[in-house]
Length: 152
Image (cartoon, rainbow, N blue to C red):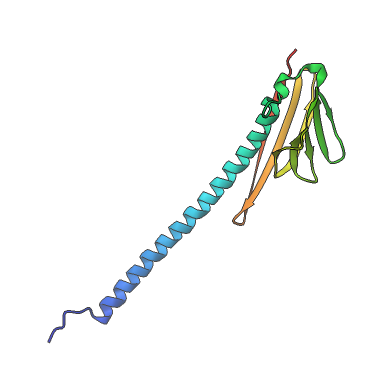
């Protein structure tokens, strides 16, 4: 007499195949999440470093950036724990204790900066920043620099 059901062996094989498929899919999903997390961290650090340089070079809001500065107007000083670029009545200041760059109003231009430097030359200034961010057990850093030529 046949009942038309599955045997125990058939059920065991089906469960084994199902387990292998689910384990493979879970591995792919975890790999995708790790890749997404890494890509997001790289994008965020790159974006922050780029935005910091852009805001200093081109300015924010109604304030002009370093591209509008004249050669004789710009000074780079090194207060304890960072640097400050001053021109006319504007400035940008990097503070190592807060890991930020802020403008003259105290508005933070960029955060999570682990290193930065500014140097003044005859025809312009060089600024570089290194931004770091951590998430999901990973830490990524991105360094960018630019040279801003002054107007004469």
